[in-house]
Length: 477
Image (tube, rainbow, N blue to C red; front, side, top):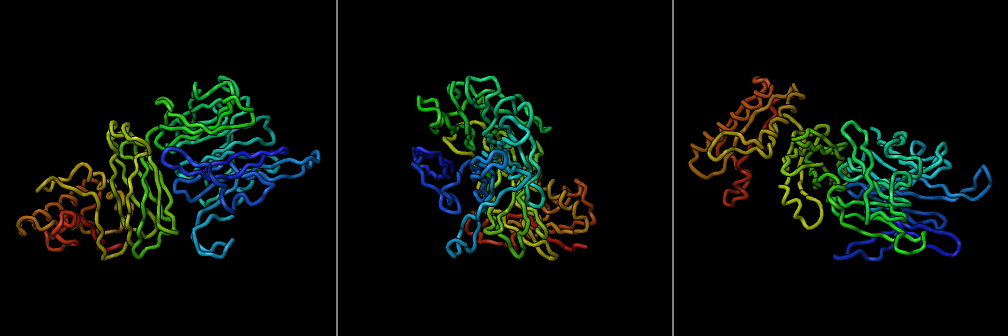
């Protein structure tokens, strides 16, 4: 989604336009339907969309008469809209639709200023934008942080080294949430607006901006830089093709490796809920190497989620859903090797993982996903220990819970041996949890062998589901 400029002999009008990829190129695009582009006297443009494509922030510019000189001016503010399912007030139909855009308010926008070009971080918690406001002689880049109640906090000027003494605008924060691309007239460049990138340090400060260089930057203006999720392709606007300076063209380019953001993995799916309300449920993703944790909202309309995490090749990521009354659940995601990442033709590494959840209640049994053992052994795999480490933390936080660990097998082999193996495996899990600080008095164990299948043992898929480790909540007080 992007905006275009249309012109006549009087002035420019910007419309919010959607273009779709047609296999080898984008089509010409069509203006978005209402609630966008409704007023012919208003400009619509400068759009950013959330990772799940259900939150949108857009610049809307309205004409007004200045109280200072009585002249007709244009005030640009940033608005927010949501993609929801329900009755559409514009046609009375029950359908998916965009809500009316709402002004983000005085913490972000100013009465007589220019706020535009928003860029939303992947976790939806930070909104970067450009502003020319009272007290500033030039355009600067600002950031606002989402508060616990869903509102946006007071915008802060990014300051040095991002903002210079001249105009700095068009921020784009990549999905890695660490690499910022922007346009500037003030940093050392080739002329006009040049594109730069800067990386955020762990303490929140920024490294010195780096000029993206030729042939992207020229002696004319380049801005509106957008980098694909996989970090390989950029889209940007430039007027360097010999046209009038007011005419911009959208160009694309393969970004060289030094300027690429960190690699990310996109994880998305559904959260099917069994007798529990999702409410404010969140998907939590933890990089097991860096211990960095990010959280992402679950859409209560349809139970979907989309999340992204910064990774290196062969990293392991722990994924789980947390919320009031939700029992422990988790999955482990493994990142491909570097060669596989580099040889991907296009697009980010994407994992589709559904995360079923159920109510936390006494007497209920829950599968511990990704618990594996060596063949015909009770030795717990390294990958499984990642899950059990986290499960131990869960039990320590809920120190009133008493749980039983149950082991199950498929029907391959003799039933007596399967019973012994499942018992040994359940004991191994109990012992491991104790080694992580969970009191032995809170844990029991039992093996059931092949006596309690949940699927048919006639297929490999069914047998895999029957080979499982479960925990049952014995008491919650």
